[in-house]
Structure formats: C-alpha cells, structure tokens
Figure 1 (cartoon, rainbow over the protein chains, first blue to last red):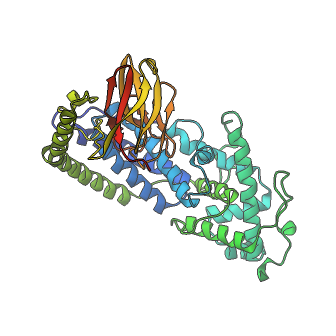
Figure 2 (figure 1 turned 120 degrees about the vertical axis):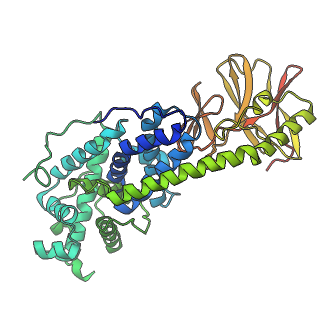
Figure 3 (figure 1 turned 90 degrees about the horizontal axis):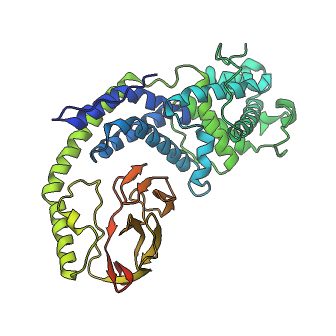
Length: 196
Length: 249
C-alpha cells in the first residue's frame, strides 16, 4: 500500500498540485472503496465524483495537504452512508444504524480487502445450494431463469434460495460485525469462492 | 406464483434459529431479484425498499459483488473524465473566490460591520471580520431588521472548556468558553441544516451526517462546506446576551 502523503504544492498553485497528486494517488482506491459498499458501477462513479468535487471546495479552505487522504476516505464513507440512507427511503432507517453494517474499523484503504475477506467467509458458511446459486448470480451474472435451467429449478425456487441465502448471510454478517474485531479469514481467497 | 410450486422448505435450507419462519412473499422475492439484476447490470437500483432486513440484505449483496475479483476496478475513461471535471472545478472555484472576495463578500462584510457598529455593542469577532476572506473561515450571523438581544447565561456559568446551548428567537447556538474568552456559534450544521450536539469538550457534531466542528466552529471533518457562523454576544451587568430574532416560530 502506498503510504505516501500528497506533497505540498508549489508556491504558485498549491491547490492544483495538492489535489492533482491526491487524485493520482487516491482516485482508483476511493472508487474501489465505494464500489465495495454499493456494488454497482453507476453508483460508484457517481459517488466517487461527488467525493472529489467536494475535495475541491474543501481544499479551497487552505486545509493542510497532509490530511487530504484521511479526508477523502472519511468523505467517501459518509457519502456511501448517505447513498444507503437514500436507498432505504430515508424516513425508516436512522443513519447511525447503517454505519456498522457497512464499515468495520477505520482504515479506509484496508476496507476493500477486509470486505472481500468477510464476504468469502460468509459465503463459505452457507449451504452448498445457497452458495451455488449466489456463485452463479454474482460470479457468472446469471439471472434467476438461467440459474434455474442450470440447476434444474424453477426461477421461483431460485429466488427463494437466493433470498434465504442473503437473509442468512446478512444475519451472519450482523453477528460478525457485532463481535470483537475482524478475525482474519481461515478461508483464503482462492478459486471463485475460496472453497472449491 | 406459478413458478413457486415447491414449498420454501424444499428449496432452501433449514431456517436459522434467528429467523422468524415467515415465508417471503412473491413480491419480496421479485423485488430482491430485481435489485440483484440491477447490481449485475452495474446500474443503480431504482426502487426503494421497505424493511430493515431487506436493507441489510441489499447492503450485503452489494458487498458480495466483491466475490468476483476485479469488479471494483474503475474504468480508465471514468478516471480520465473525472480528472478533467476536477480540474474544471478548481478553475471555477478560483474564479468564484476572486469574484466573491471583490464583490459579494465585500458587500456582506460592510453590511455586517455597519450593523455591528450601529448597534454600538461588542460584537464577537468584529475585529476579525475585516481580514477574513475565505469562505471556510467563520462568518458572522447577521440578523436583518428584527433583531433582539436574549439573555442566555449568567456570568461565570460556562466554565473554560464548557459550552451551553441556547436559543435566541430563531437563532440556535452554543455559548462556548475558550480559555476564559466567551463566544457563540450557530448550532445548525452548514451542510444540510441539522442540529448539532456538543461532542465532549472538543466541539460539535452534526446529528444527521456526522460533520464535526471545533469549538470555534471550524470544520474538522465531514461534508459541511463552511464553518459555523458566529453569533454576536455581549456582556452586561453580570449577564451574557446573544443577538437573535425578535420573532420565534
């Protein structure tokens, strides 16, 4: 991981220089960080743009260049929380209940790896059929009808399996997130889901 | 319904103890399925969901996209266009600052100074106003026309490091004591207008989106674009007064 801080800019154009190097260094990582929590490119591109355009205004306030990396992750995090708040229909879900489901720990740069490890761990704990349906869905991008054909199920059956799988997985994630710290996975990331 | 012939028990696995044994409705099934479809098409889902559990499932499903390596890599053309957009925004911001400094900000400062002078009172931070040019530095909250001084605290009531919430008609604020120096800042977040709460003795935090401000109102963290406006206070005969609006809601 690149731990370098954005450098102080030249005297003439410090803001451009600071933001320019911060952009080069962080844009792809911030995008991945956001993608890991929204799961689609359209939203990830939209939210990433929001974060960097806010950074322009933020830097206009003579902030220290040292803090921009932390600021970018903090802003990405709150932008993602706002996104889910919006998705939830806003009224029903208080913001503070969203955060623990989305983030664990404070190191933004680590978050993608940590999320992937957790997802693989949780998939590994599901039944074989649940895992197979989710694998075909998420890895191959098949829809319910296509998965039904492949597994000899009706599309309705597939939808039931995928819903139960996600219910169970969400419960597992909630339990894990409520527990102490992340236990680094026994499931190494190999193969499609690390358990073939 | 027709393709849901099998009972849920045959299709799924035994219920987890923590799950209520309520079979999902076809609506629930189709809604979740449509959501997964939109994720896999890399599109933002367009419908909202009603239930908390479904929200948790959706958040997890979004994270499950990571089970496939590489999905989280941005398109190079996206990064290029964003970089161009950011450069453009820096240019706009510079232009805005130049104009803002010369015209509107100047007019605003004169208005603020005139008002403060006219009132003949010790307005917090007046001496600082003239040198302030950055949007991010604190500005003074100006009440236009229907101002009213409210008694908000007794002398010595707020110890150094302390803060007291007050309302002065339509103005909500915190009276803070920084090393013996009293000042007052707005208690409304500059991001979306939510109320702030004190955060220990370090400053204030927005109840909606978590933006944080220090005790002088400067933004420490979060989405807030500006520092908290300062509220004029005066000290008179053992009491502290804040300038608010005559009318209340």
